[in-house]
Image 1: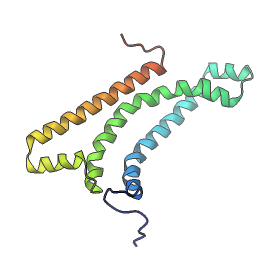
Image 2: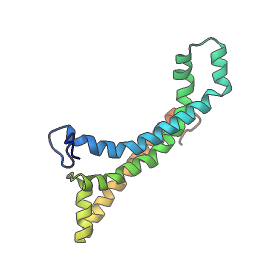
Image 3: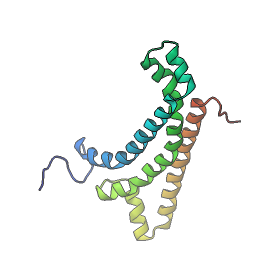
Image 4: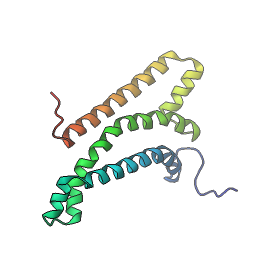
Length: 151
């Protein structure tokens, strides 16, 4: 059965060629974030300060937006560091499977050809990207949780 809805491989001018790789890379992380956000919001809604905000007569939308979500997002931001690392390393395989020209394809070619300088350069680029992403997550964590301050 061949539907021909989306191209199976390649990277070109059409947005249709981006749909499958984006779905492959985003589905797992999206499920983790959705599940963690739901659990965190449900836990936060049972707290005393939420009950107090409701007792004051605040609208439910305001209680969720101003009280529940800011405190519920902290565990989600905590998990973003490892999730971004998994997403970045997953691009190796997505590039290979969907025949997308990129650094992951060059890395796999360098491994098979034993091009050690290319392997080291690729690992260095990915390491710098991972450190930068984790730094951004840590800075965001410091802004979201006022109890956490870095000296």
